[in-house]
Image 1: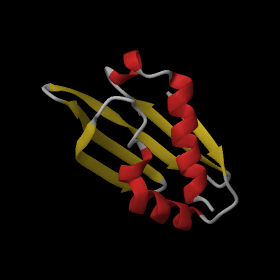
Image 2: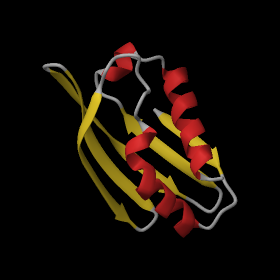
Image 3: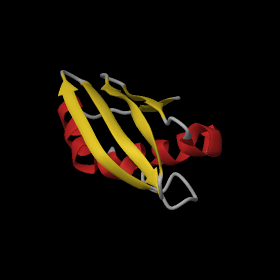
Length: 105
């Protein structure tokens, strides 16, 4: 799934905001009580590569992807694993997009 949000801020400022609030980007996207654990993230230039594990009881699924910060956009490519079957993609795009926009204010 791809989520794109336009911006007019310096790249470094956006990268710092994403780094500070990364854990909040995916929280609450599901109605189900999901815990996000084992977060890993690495910046290479203007691209953040991330992975984490979404757990609900004994069931878990990996979430992985990238966040690219360009001069005009923040582009998130994310694979939600099994969660994509249970979550409407429009809702995920809306929630994550709103959180990115809030970071950019």
